[in-house]
Amino acid sequence: MKSALILVSLLTLVVGCDAVDAMKATKSMDDKMDQTNAGMKQTNIGIVTTNKVIAETNENIRLQKLILSKNDMLEKENTKNLTPVALGMIAGAKKFSEAATTEELMEYTFLLLKEINDGKPDDSLKNEKGQFPTDIVEEYDHQKMIKFNQILTIAGFTPTEKITQIIEEQIYEGGLYQDEAYAFLMARVFFLGTYLDNSLLAKPLKTVKKMEETINRIGSIDFLLKTPFKNYIKMNVTGFLKADAIEISLFTNGEMDDTWNAPKLWKKVMAGFKSDLKDGNVVTGSSVEQTNLSIQIAALKAKVQAYQDSWK
Image 1 (cartoon, rainbow, N blue to C red):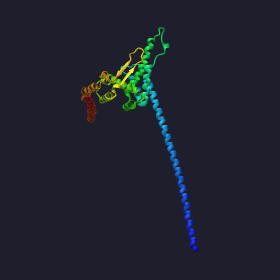
Image 2: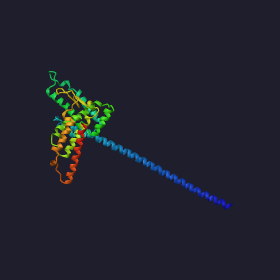
Image 3: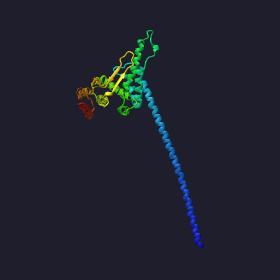
Image 4: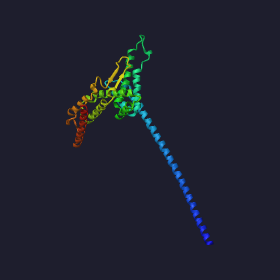
C-alpha cells in the first residue's frame, strides 16, 4: 500500500512537471507569436509608409511634368507662329496631356476659355482718344490666340483612353465640365484636321510609320464624327479686340469641313497605298523584312477599307 502511494506521488510529480513544462512552452510560443505579429505589424506599417512615400514622390514628379510642359508650351520661341497650327507647342502639349488627369484637362480648358472670352485689357492702357493703341491690341489678341492654341494642341495629342474617359465622365454622366468637354473635342478635331492637312497629308505617305500615324489620327476624327452627341461638339471663342470670333462646329448644315471630312480623308489615304506606299518606295535590307512590311501594309490597307465601308 505504501509502495502504491509512492508510485502515485511520483506519477503526479512527473505529470505536474510535464504540465509546467507544457505551460512554459506554450507561453514561450505565445511570446514568439506576439513578437512575430508585432514584427509583421511593423513590416506592414513600413510597407504602407514606403508606398505612401512612393505615391507622394510619383505625384510630385507628375506635377513637375505638368509645370515644365506648360512652361515649354509658353516659351516665346514656341508661340511666335500659331498658324496654321502651333507646331512649337506640340512637344509641350504631348507631355502635358500625358501627365494631366482628365479633370485637370477639363479644368484647364475651362480656365483658358474663360480667360479668352472674358478677359479685358486694363483701361489705363487706352490713349488720349480713349482707344487701345495698335500694339496693345495686337499683343492682347496674340496672347488670346496662344491660349486658344494651347487648347487645340493639348486636345489634339491627348491619349485616346483619356478622351474616352472625358466622354464618359463629362458627357454621358453629365459632368461639371460638359460644355468644356464639347469644346475640347471640337478643338481635337480642328487641330488634327489642320495638322493632317499641313503635315502628314501634305507629303507622300511613303513609309509604313507615316501611313500608320495618319490612319490613327484620322481614326480619332472618325470616332468623334460618329458619336451620338456629334451635333453638340462645337467651340465658340470670342473676346478679341480686333480679330474675328472663332465659331466652329463638327457639322455645319449637315456638312463636314474638308479638313476633317473622314470619308474624303480615307479616300485620300487609300489612294496613297497605290501612289506612295508601293513596292518601289519600300526599302528593306532582306526578304524577311520585305515580307513583314508587306504584311503590315496589307493590314493597314484592310483597316482603311473597313473605315471606308463604315460610311456606306
